[in-house]
Length: 133
View 1 (cartoon, helix red, strand yellow):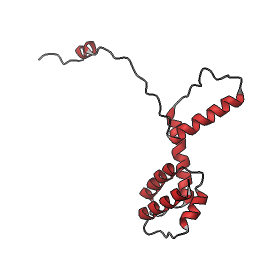
View 2 (cartoon, one colour):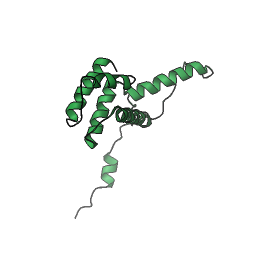
View 3 (cartoon, helix red, strand yellow):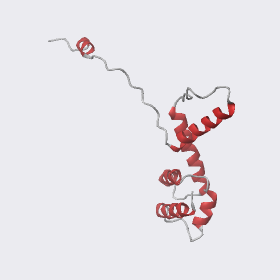
View 4 (cartoon, helix red, strand yellow):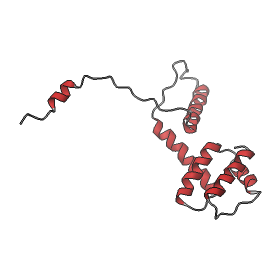
């Protein structure tokens, strides 16, 4: 997160938590504490936290972001390595795996939707029709 994004996040959090004290130095402090957090994730965390609490801290934002990113990875499902990746090249595999995990956690990779073949449903519909009265 850049210093400008940290200031924007503080301004946003201040509007979400008007009873909490913010001043001209809050953005600098939050910027230092949240430097490794992406702004979009931090803003999403602010929204989630302020829905359940009238107060917010950088530690809560960090915890919420970790939870959100872990959930994205858990919900993504299995990932298949590219065919040209040498399974014996551990360094390349680890680099690929970390990159994929980061992309999934960032929300840049969406799970592939399994497309089922289309079926002719008339036979099933005829089986379950109500008998005539």
